[in-house]
Image 1 (cartoon, rainbow, N blue to C red):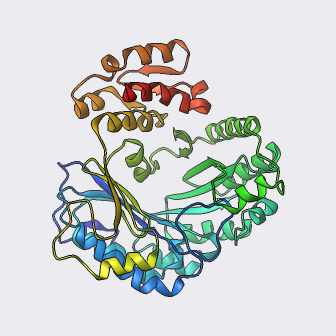
Image 2: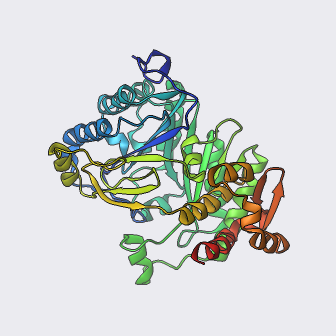
Length: 405
């Protein structure tokens, strides 16, 4: 059965209620990328079968959610290490236990090296959107990142994905890398565009504590990235993407019209999502949850359920559950909403959510940032100006002052 065709569901589709999202974390990897600070493991593949069962158990525990979902995102880690049958088991379990929108976006991250023709054809029965970790076209950068693929793997993956019927493909790229030149970055962006993707995510490299790349830069084995050069790379990418007909709908995301990632937008609008899996984060009912990190502990907790159910959205896998007060929620809605460059932060939606006008509550901040050329208003929306995109954190901090008062 093709479970992307949600019209075959036995569950009633409810469109009148707010839409939610699910993030499902798959923490297994073959190799660990040198820049990666996510919750991933290269030596626990034998746990995959039990882990899939535990994910399904956590899905069931959260299934009394009354609102329908409209996106499912399988991230990692490397979700493509799971067999198509295991992925189908998880997705079908979600669709049996949750109500959902008639247009359901199901995204899976995939390692280009895993994208065989047979695998992608099997995947297409359950997944509607792919996100491929291209990262760079340059062999030396891929080696520096400890990526286990090369660019021909990406080319082949996109070809096989199109043959399998995927019409929504994202490519990830990283810029601001140690030793990267503007010409190298231009080559990577152009190589990505040559593959005619539907969506591109381009992220400035962040040297995270505990990563191999941070260690190598700290000890002088690699040069420190140049932030001014990274800014030039961002501007170049923006120009190239605009010339290719892509819309920059978020600070780090570009898409063809009609191909915006709805799961990403859920985050940027500060709307609720459930985090499922080891180390997964969630935000629901004004509570931010984080699950236990180690897959073994996650599996154990989902096998040994407490006699009394925990308050939603907590499950036995929950490590922390932090209530989010109104002030914090308001600030987060502002800074995530302003990241939506094309749509902006809706003044009407803000008032409906909080019962007060953004332009009144933060009148001084908005006037000051507008005079500085960092904010502008277009109809109902408050937006970052082009010059504010590279210093967006400065804009966001202006609203954080109100939160702390």
